[in-house]
Length: 469
Ligand code: UDX
Ligand code: UDX
Image (tube, rainbow, N blue to C red):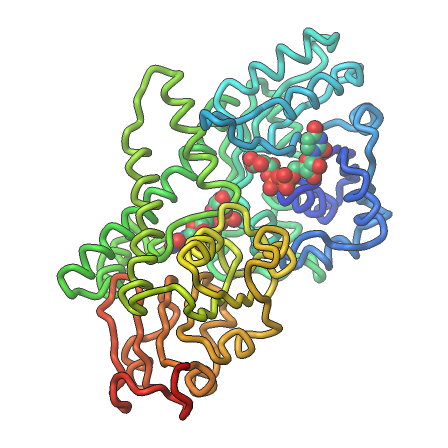
């Protein structure tokens, strides 16, 4: 099938590349000419596993790039809208990009087409998109507006697309549902998974994935409610972690105990610095606004957001408790991305923590395996940038772990300890075992678990021979 995907950001680019992988002819449309030129020349603008392989496989053949939205829409049976939906000052989703895309494609609708919302949008957006298309001259019997929400996580977006837990098709007519089913058929009939060069199956995949056909409105709600529920799970465990800290319990054990109840599940129960990223913070605000507009005050979401914000403040208090004063302290920060496996720093809790440390007068050296360039755009010359974790740590008064990169979990702890001025690790992501850290001579602070102090070293002596100046 020939399809257009409008918006080649995280969502659109991955969806476009994956649809090409399923055998469709995809036109990826964006109004950012520089981005398009870079994509055409073979660069991969985001750090996303398997995306370089897919772009390499399909670029120039089943996947082409264009800034001509109208022409792309004319040539396509389905047009996916994946442009940004940033929050307004009031927390509502700004749908002006979605509206302008709808306006522009209206004139391209002559034969039957399906216009599909891929961006996360409030309920009723499909109704508005339909109105805008009609107002701008699209014949009402030649199109349907559908909602096909994505549940892609950054870092695993390609496998999330190709091996989804479910495919949600929000279609209000049988014709529209049929077309959308056809698009995903290589996944739902399992033929994609039998291909020799298929992207490898991740752990815990259900193949073929189930398809859930709903009304467009229900699909819009499924997306917001899913993200809100996941964020609630994270805030819940963060609140439990605080109680654990207060009573001296271990949140890992508590998670094991509650997560093994199949009704609860183990996933998304990792306490830490709270959730960030381009989706959860924005979608919670938008969902609250949607509920309010619909006459319901969703106070639970306020509390989810409050706990999330509080989690960063609690971490900062932990840093202050561990180091006393922060002015002039040299701190190594490992991780700037909002989570491991991505170079995205949008709404990253790590960036907020770094900014707070700078306000307190600390000198910060940062290292992130993928997000250094983006970190520079935001933090500029307020921090120094290390070439690797060990360089960041050298001579620092303490190391702060702010992103759950796998690479950090495997660091050479003895080397870190030797490089640090004081053996202090403040871990906002619970990457290490307190027992092991204590055995390696660290003061170790984490989330929801008791602090650990060195078993082998006298408590306050610097690891290296030099004394603090
Ligand atoms: C976006 C939304 O923010 C999210 O809610 C939704 O679920 C998916 O789309 P993301 O892909 O991360 O997420 O956004 P972003 O990286 O900002 O990409 C949007 C792209 O659309 C950009 O490349 C931008 O240049 C392009 N765009 C934007 C257009 O082509 N036309 C427009 O009118 C506006
Ligand atoms: C999320 C949704 O998972 C995805 O379905 C949707 O399409 C887009 O939004 P993403 O933002 O890429 O995906 O990341 P996710 O893995 O969900 O993590 C979001 C945030 O929650 C990160 O900051 C992460 O560090 C944090 N998190 C996640 C926790 O603090 N604890 C957890 O147990 C899980």
